[in-house]
Image 1 (spheres, rainbow, N blue to C red):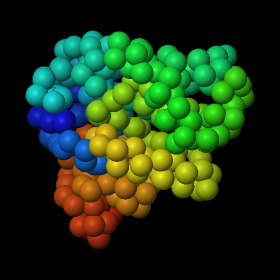
Image 2 (cartoon, helix red, strand yellow):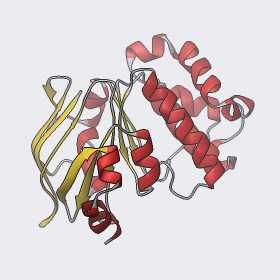
Image 3 (cartoon, one colour):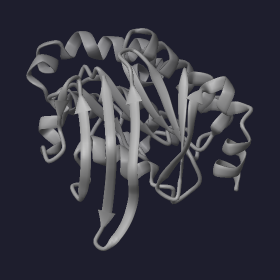
Image 4 (cartoon, rainbow, N blue to C red):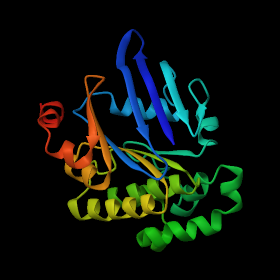
Length: 233
């Protein structure tokens, strides 16, 4: 579903990624872990077309999307749940979700998809008319995931979904992510909660200082000295 080849990225003259290679298979959940400042968010933004200063290849379902605008990449079946959630605070839960169904095929099915989102996150159903800015942090994270699902993605990019959430809410979010992946949606998960990320994922990659330092099956990474050095320093 996703093949990243020799991807490099810059912020002005400062290089953030160095020849990164990564793959996510169809229906697979893969995590990207690493310390703060490793370049994880830059990689996700580059895949989604939100960071343009890149060199290399980002192939989504056989199409190289490097250089395409973000809305065209979204049209390839990609949706992102950004770090910090970024819901529209002065709009209702219902309207936030409707904005996620921007693709033509998604608009045609938005009522059915919204019902599925409410089934996945019952709290959102109970707060459908409530302003998004009045929700708790955990509910806003659920809304951000639900909004992405409204686009009917085949590849879901998640940037730090557990950030700032209480453990009980993290449980709910990760249970939902497991169900989403179980429905056949490919997942690329950026996360600092290493145990959670590796529990959800079949495989993982470790990024440190903009370079890929380790990769492999989740169980192997969990026990790896490279992960402890690369993630925990």
